Amino acid sequence: MPSLRHEKLCLAPVAGVDEAGRGPLAGPVVAAAVILPAKGVPRGIDDSKKLTAAARATLHDRIIDRAIVGIGIVEAPEIDTLNIHWATMKAMTLAVENLVEIGGCHPGHVLVDGNRLPRWPYQATAIVKGDAISLSIAAASIVAKHTRDTIMLAHAESYPHYGWHSNKGYPAPDHLRALREHGPCPLHRRSFAPVARLFRQESAVPPL
Image (cartoon, rainbow, N blue to C red; front, top):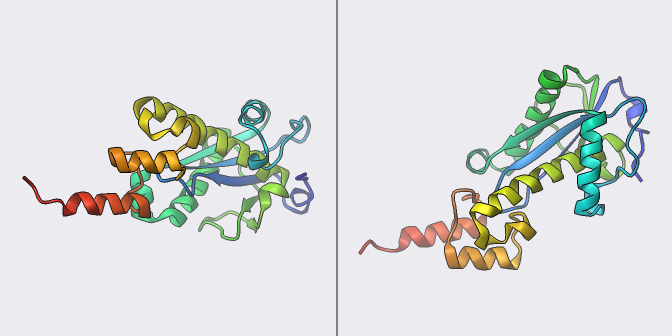
């Protein structure tokens, strides 16, 4: 289980940062920054991938209620412009900026899941598999994942044939099949290979 071992080595307050949505073919990449409270940390926080959707939803609400939280969202068109790596870095930066602007809290140190850091002025440490090690990063992973899933469930109402209610925009078989049958929609990432191929095929069809 993740712990506060890394947080205790850093200048407080410590923010954990993680993202959700690097791999999908549609929708945004979402990052969250979380500063956990000194007391009353919700029990059960873990890497979001190890939790059920119901557990994530419950923990998300408890984290939002007790912690200081910032969210950063970068939509599909900007992902295509920046590429997914830099879009993820921007989402993380926006999450910490939101933490400062909305939460009114400047982190003394930021712990980031992964092996790369955004270009920002904050003291920070990248931790590979940080969502399984750091409690703050694990909390951020829950908030980011639940937030993105909620966004994709809302979009699923407008675009029901892509199966986003279950695949959340990832390249699952039902999503890929719907892409071939219906083509991409405005929320698809045109720079991602399965979508890019369809756009190339559409542009190669001569007009009638």
